[in-house]
Image 1: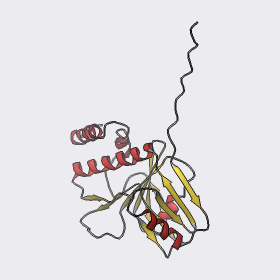
Image 2: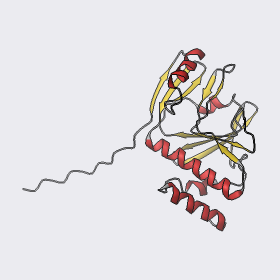
Image 3: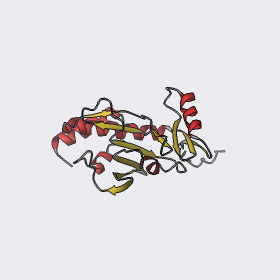
Image 4: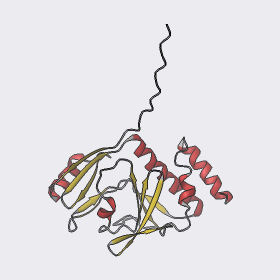
Length: 203
């Protein structure tokens, strides 16, 4: 007798692994960074006594890497001088905060920057610290936040971030156009197709 077909179950994407600790001191934060050493994970964030350790999921890492490679492709096509600094730790003891972007960039020829000009954050799993609240006293000019397939852009005005409709550090970049290639695989094909579109000036 034939067995009934089992229902197809779509396995949900893996979530980021996030651990949050309250009541952590600046010394605690520094000790965690020291213990982690040169490893890329966990990523560590700190905000006024709140400490977060995150092991990003495969999906999280794929999105942040694709966003970065596409930004770099745009800069190459448009002759914009930019240097990637990955998850460079930005921190300030005086304002009691620290963060490691998913990707970050410095514009121009500065070889000893104090801060990045552009930070990119991927929100894949809810429940983490408010990264904009961390960034707002660190002097990062612009922050992009990817969430649910869209990117929100914020520019620093004083110590507050203002939402903007177009990038100010990369004027002319079309975020919606770039996002069309984030899920194209492999990465090399996505970049080739994106650069071809940029050179053709098409839509």
